[in-house]
Length: 258
Image (cartoon, rainbow, N blue to C red):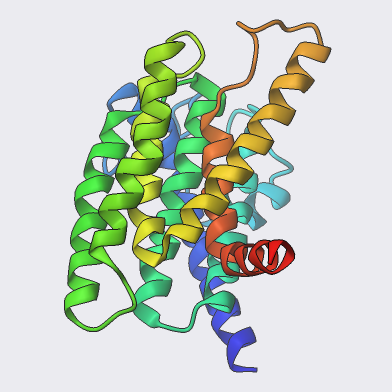
């Protein structure tokens, strides 16, 4: 019951935070403020009323259209809100330390925002990755100092190993890997490495698997290499999966090979 309640509360926070992420996804790539002005319809410019800004529910009640002009609201808004709620709930169900839950929920939120931006615009903004490096490095150091199960040395090793691996790939084949992906893998390695290097390994394995499947799918659809989907969503999905099931997957794999 305690776990279920914790997950439920986290899901509610996730819905609210997911609504904020939709603003981040819209404005950060355009170098806009995520604070002002308040959310408004991109079609008619009408500010969105509080009753029309309830995560998921407002979208359903409005049938996916602006109340004023009738412009269709992209489905990614409620999908991002639901994905954030699911990630927050899953994190709260798996982890018990309040500090780690907050840290990892924030990490999942960054991953979802990056995935949505990269999928839509094929960029991973430095305005997200650079501040995230500083923020998570600080949180890891503070958590370790106050007795949380976080390893700053593992964070450094994870960032260098994961980011360095993809840096080599980017240098060898610059057309197939962007520097935004390299910075993202460094960030993922930093956070997951603080939990244990096995989490980094799980994230990398899942990301490579998903990226390969997505690439083959794009080629089969006749899109060619230039039309292949970006790698950021696969990296983000691998990172979130590592947060949620990394321990289980690592234990299963180690048990199967010994």
